[in-house]
Image 1 (tube, one colour):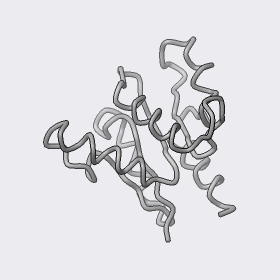
Image 2: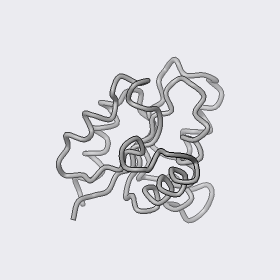
Image 3: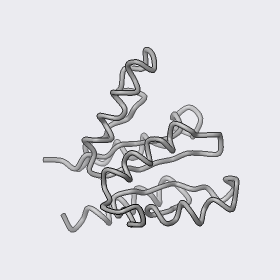
Length: 134
């Protein structure tokens, strides 16, 4: 059975098709909210997205530079499902935090949740590294 990965964050059109290189990794089964969740309305995509997160073994999140409230809800839900106590580090969570993302002060808080990388390619390598021992 393939490892399931939820791709959270910005839509491809706003982040240079960042998810497409992940989907070429055949050893994973990706849930991409843009295509795998019914985007008709919040009544359909909210439960579809959360079910995709609940069923995922790993999450790669790319909040981009724009406000990303939905992404942070997704990250928080995944984090809560994959840790025992609030201060735990989630070794199944990879967040792409671009160096030009603001506010700068919040990165120290975010670092406590999971692995932080600067680019999608780094996230892809980290995902492969984490799952190589499975």
